[in-house]
Amino acid sequence: MQASLQSADPAVFASVQAEIHRQQDDLELIASENYVSKAVLETLGSPLTNKYAEGLPNRRYYGGCEFVDEVENIARRRARELFMVEGCDIGVNVQPHAGAQANQAVFLTLLDAGDSMLGLDLSHGGHLTHGSPVNSSGKLYTAAHYGVGADGRIDMDQVRAQALATRPKLIITGASAYPRIIDFAAFRSIADEVGAYLMADIAHIAGLVAAGVHPSPFPHCDVVTTTTHKTLRGPRGGMILAKRDLMKSMNSAVFPGTQGGPLMHCIAAKAVAFGEALSPDFKAYCQQILDNAAAMADRLMSRGIALVSDGTENHLMLIDLSRSPAAPDDLTGKHAEAILGEAGITVNKNTVPGEQRSPMVTSGVRIGTPAMTTRNMGVAESVQVADWIADVLTQPADEALRTRIKAEVQGMCRRFPIYPSMG
Ligand code: DSN
Image (cartoon, rainbow, N blue to C red):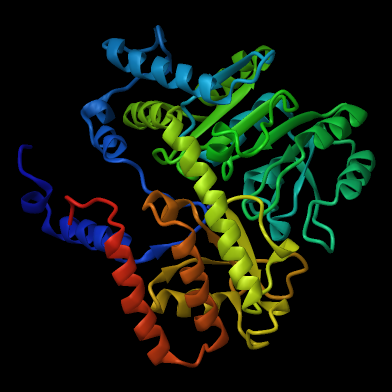
């Protein structure tokens, strides 16, 4: 019981150490990842993981909840403060284990089996839980999709046409791989026209919204879901924010509707992260994410690497290899992910609009700046990273180049440590 991980379980300890070193020495450009603070890590590793606390603060099914009640109330209060909009009363549930569970609870609240929903197509940047046939959202409900136009931006005429044709009970906005600002007001007017609820899944942009560098989905949306671990830079988890009249049924849909005991160590860590996000430093951090992404996007395009929508307005960009004049025609997203990995640059392959290849191969690469910005890397580093990426993608046969870049990447990463006292 008292032994350290190192002596109690050397095998797991070794893997944890190796992962810390990987995070330290590789350049993390997966758009949905980030590094939490030491305070958030400490909270995640606290004995709050031992506590059962089904129900809500002051209305639990177990005794001994007085202190976990305190942290859940702090988390809820801070979340409301982060996302509150003048004149729009919202409630918060911080218990969803992840974004998928938050979305599932919203669907359980607003829809009956077979009801129709309308969301962004997965291959155009949407998410599995927005009605994909392989996800429960697509199996239990009747899902239709809209997409982006030739310019890579959400085609609002198509959204409206699809909404009029399918009369959805719920319209979902929000994305996993969309580099442009979302016009929540335009979605609201379409939702009003067809009498639909409007939900925004802001998992990717939550930090940007909280910092005020992306427009807020409130007051336009009835309900907003998010994860807490992407741009919001908290622990892995989910959250629901909804207009007050929907909140009671949302709470019931989380528990007992779809979940059992909440993860109180995660909820406490969410409270800590929300406190960090309320600080002026966080606004500066989010602005830097945008500045870094813009600089990287401009440099990539100047090097003959095409981006979906020809740029970015948020934290991510989507390379379209099939349209990139400087990259070989047969270079796939899968191969690009592998060779960038050999150069110490971690990204994920991604489908692009009009994708001709399978989701396991793809023609795209998704790149995001939240994690590197947390390391205090700025515009100069972003331009350097874009050059490394362009070098690798334009010369995929050059292994020696990748070896040289990997050493340079490692050198830069060591100048921007993440957890100096670890590993
Ligand atoms: N896996 C997340 C992402 O990478 O965007 C979405 O769930």
